[in-house]
Length: 162
Image 1 (cartoon, rainbow, N blue to C red):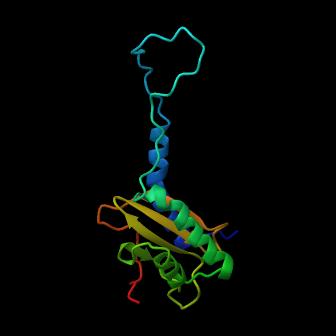
Image 2 (image 1 turned 90 degrees about the vertical axis):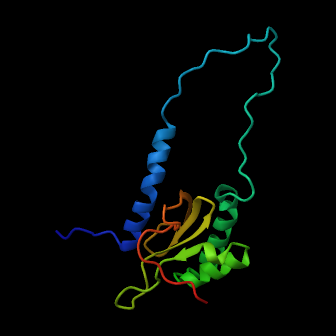
Image 3 (image 1 turned 180 degrees about the horizontal axis):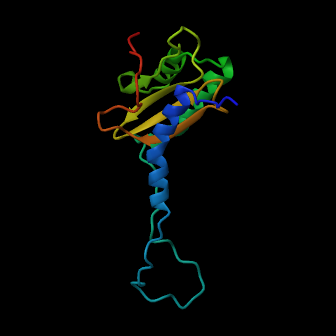
C-alpha cells in the first residue's frame, strides 16, 4: 500500500503552527489561586470587574486579522486563485504594507500549479499568515509569532517585485 506524503505547503503549515500549539498549551496551565486582596462585598449586587477586557490595539496583528481574513476570503471566493500575486495585490489595496509581505511560489519545480500557497504580513513581532489552495479544506488565516530573522514564512519564498 502506498503511503500518502503531505504536500510541501502542508508541511510548511505544520511547521508554522508548531509555535502556536506550544503557546496554546502553555496558556492552559492553571495559575495559582491568589488570596483575595479585599473582603467580599456583603450585598449581592454585581460589582464591576477590576480586570479590563483585552482589546487589541489597532496596529497589532490580532486587530488586523479580521481584515486580512476578509481580503483572503474574497479573493478565494471570487476566483479560487492559487496565484500569490492576487492575494498580495488585494492585501496592498486593503492597506497592508507590501514591504512587510512574503508569499510562497505558486508553481511547482515542474511548472504545475501549487497545491497550496502561503502569504504573510509582518506586523510588529507577529505575522498574519494565510494559506489557500485545493489541498487546503478552506482558506486559513492565523496570527503567528514572527521568526527571529524578521520573516514570517519558513522555507523559500518568491520575490514580491511587481
